[in-house]
Image (cartoon, rainbow, N blue to C red; front, side):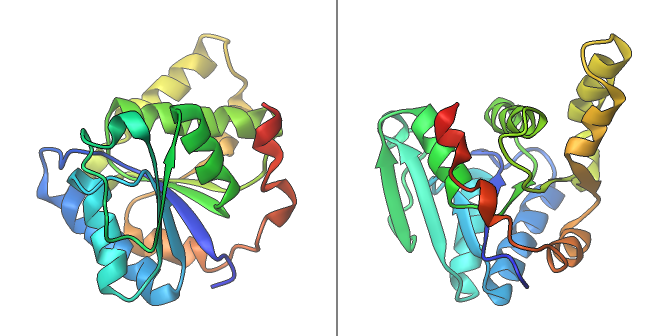
Length: 194
């Protein structure tokens, strides 16, 4: 695998379907086995904790980045390889961006949507050209994709907005896609200008 790190956006809850946790474990295991560092929100709960624990169990490295005010709410993961506590959500997102070669969106709620829309917007504004993958486990992302399609249909985004990300059905397909990516080091720190 040519990339060295992946930011994963996912829920701090487990969600209502067992497939969500199963695919989160599969992702963590696959990243750990491939030697790809996980960069994530630093929590030890929900799918966030599931992915991180699976990476660690597979012998991989995990960078957690969490804002101070979420320290107790998301139960900061003390067992990760590197842990950074930031002053704000914006700083958290900027650091996650700077330390990642690609972005993976797993099942999650409003926080996951927020991170996903922001990283898509940064790509639309040409602040980066790092790949974004949405793993549509059991159709969980259908509503997010409908939102994007609705923006296009209503004239608030061009049809090219669909090219900002790629949708894959599962972790196995994701890992195949990640295995072919070159490192996008040229845009790593550009987000600091936003």
